[in-house]
Image 1 (cartoon, helix red, strand yellow):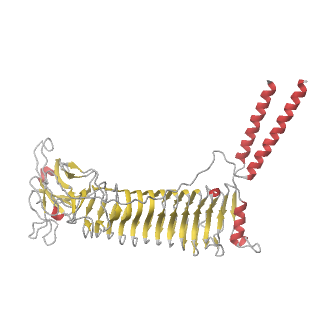
Image 2: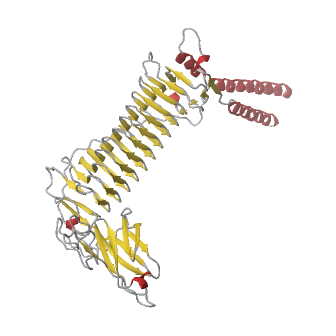
Image 3: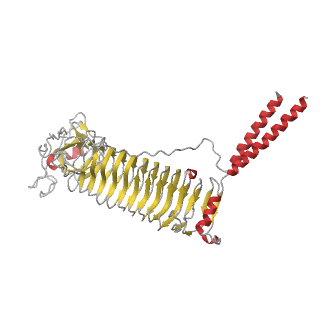
Length: 575
């Protein structure tokens, strides 16, 4: 029994030595010196640096110390970190190399590679190419390239962050790939800013995408989240969608794009478009897609475009769409336009704020049927006045922030709504001092009024709030914000007239309106985005370095010899 215990202890000791041997063989940092240090006869600078990379072990760091290199094409086919802490410039790829890229990360063995800290300028092809691999990180680089700044093909789990990519045909180009994180990049003055085609599961977040032809282009994609980006001043579209499924576009600023803030074509299923500011474009949102199943557009501010929302000639309606609770106002053409459709005489959407309580001020196409969200002005006592946006008696808490201006007694307070309500505080003595005068509020293109009243020792104690009236645009001096009138009118309280484009009832004190219309859905075949599955065959325990493997084998051999010797000795003793 004692001998068996000794054998067990020795085996345990051998295993511990083997594990410690693996852990103590640490990754190395290999420095790439200034380009002038490499002058081996018959080899280009690119070939000489490639030899150094080829000799590196898995997990090593290749650190570029020089300030300038040119004509490099470097292939990475193992897990290594390639860095520069000094902003190394690499100008052009090796023109004799068919790859035409500066860094080529290739194959599953390159999984886990990172590249960071470089200034890359390539007149021949791509800055960085990622091909058929996984778990790659590209960060903190400045890149300009003839083709793509960063090109990703047939890969998964790729992170591209904190890069500045300019003057390239495509800033970032991704095809046939999945599980992508594209964050905190600046993509400026490229032909295409960010292009995704045949991709699955991409997060695009906190990027600044400006002065490109198209800002973000999606083609045949599935599960794409576009969040908190600034997409400005692009020549075509801020965001272009073609044959997409399960796309979320949220909390973005999409401004001053020459043609479209957002353009959709062909198939568009399960698009969620919420909490975006879309302004200064020709079309804020142009829907020209033939399948719009489960389209959701809510809580967006769509202002100061030529046309707010435009339904194009190829648009086919869906009964599962929800376009409601948006601020669609102050657009110079139509707030909502239905153009040249062969499918619909009328089209119905949900209630939105169009800058007015009354139909004749709501700047929407006569073919559209939409409920009008109402603005009500009320006193809450003690100098507090509320502007409440409601529909059918319910406060529209999911509206985006809307600016409301309150004016009385020489004071002017401008405040944005929160959850559909704007509250102005004129001070606790305001009602007493201004009793008998009028308080005005401007929301959208209308002025609203309410009388200021005061009851001694009973201000805001059970008193019924007073409701304001609304004024239309007049031509004799008593109008609202219309052309040809003499500014803001001073009509008394009352309800704005019904009538106009939509059959609705617009009683200001109740804040209700109703609408009816016709909608229909046409069926189309859905070509689904291709889902690319790339096997991740990382084992739980994997020895990737031949040196480590050799040490491990030697330790095991020595252990076997020791165990054999002890067993033989114990056998002799027993005789």
